[in-house]
Amino acid sequence: MHTTGGPGVFKYEDVPQPKPRQGEFLIEVHCAGVNPVDTKIRKGKYKPFRPRLPAIIGRDVAGVVRGVGGKARKGRRSAFRVGDPVFGMLDYDRGAYSEYTIASAREIAFRPKNVSERDAGAIGVAALTAWQGLFDHGRLKKGQRVLIHGAAGGVGHFAVQFARISGATVIATASKRDLDWVKGLGADEVIDFKNQRFEEHTGNIDLVLDLIAGDTQDRSWGVLKTSGGAIVSTLTEPSKAVARKHHARGMRMVVKVKTAQLRKIASLIGSGRVKVTVAKVFPLRRVTEAHRCLENDHVRGKVELHIAPTWTDLAARMSENGGTPSQLAVYAGTGLSGLGPML
Ligand SMILES: NC(=O)c1ccc[n+]([C@@H]2O[C@H](COP(=O)([O-])OP(=O)(O)OC[C@H]3O[C@@H](n4cnc5c(N)ncnc54)[C@H](OP(=O)(O)O)[C@@H]3O)[C@@H](O)[C@H]2O)c1
Image 1 (cartoon, rainbow, N blue to C red):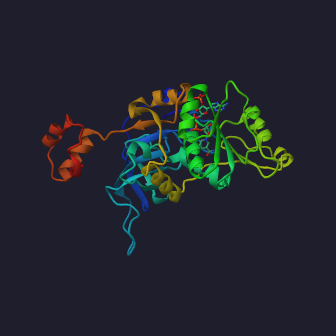
Image 2 (cartoon, rainbow, N blue to C red):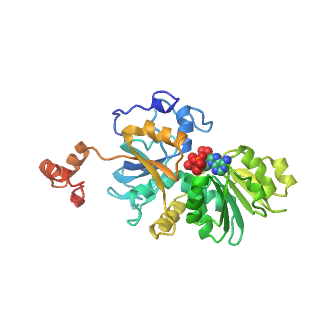
Image 3 (cartoon, rainbow, N blue to C red):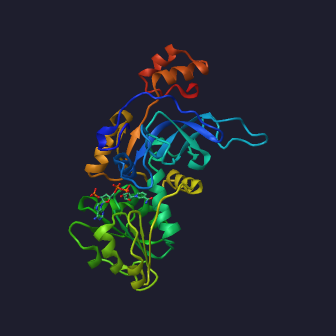
């Protein structure tokens, strides 16, 4: 991005490969989840972070470590080695919409073999937000009742599954076309937010996870249990005065990267207990369409960018590992599946 604004501000162009410094890793990006926060940063309207232009944005990442910065400290092993598959949530100023990016060990975790790159690239912001909203801030416990607003989106579809696994009763709001799908994720009741008023259909709620704000948040106080309930919002700070009136807690959360949580979430996905829904995948060149899709279309789950290594990268890597460019040409038609160790 050379400027902030609409989805058309993205330019697909070459820039120098970033260089990892001490404690950092060069990541070859294969998948990058697209989040609403990316669209806000693109517009230059996200208060916590304004990009220094020109900028590459994008926080969710899955890929492979291709370089380790600095010198190995005596007696200390690097957290990751070249060739390790990793995924995570990058700091705002990194930029996963790119063939290569930089991450520190704090921002990434090892990707287990039973989690695909596609699924891993969708975890970052959305799954960590769901986890932290429910458990770190919401203190959700087994047997409690949670209401999740916006359950069919990126954060919501993880939240429904995590809450279900924790043993909570899950009530969710979603569009009519998503009701059955959200039920299939594990919700006990799903309320059609366009045609029903949720406060007329549920109550005695311990925790509201508010991914919508506005009128939805205002009306949520009325569904909390009489004392000790909570509203955790990803968007706007609930009024402290209104919270007191309802003998409840209210807070706005901001997601933080926690590698132990990334590992836990990956293990739930690897074991099949949590399913990631990636509704649409775009190649990096079509990032403008990916942003339009997230902003204007109805999306179930996540939107993601896929970034294939260039032929130049593949040829260089093959020759480093004893292969030849002609072998690459032979394999070009086979979807690269046979190249294995040479890549
Ligand atoms: N503070 C933080 O750290 C943090 C972290 C992550 C996300 N967020 C914010 O949290 C929000 C949700 O994120 P996301 O990634 O899940 O977004 P998303 O993928 O765009 O999902 C939003 C979902 O909400 C649904 N929806 C719209 N209006 C609704 C309503 N009135 N009631 C119930 N559902 C409604 C949408 O359904 P339709 O498609 O049918 O309209 C969609 O399924 C975003 O605004 C994001 O910026 C904040």
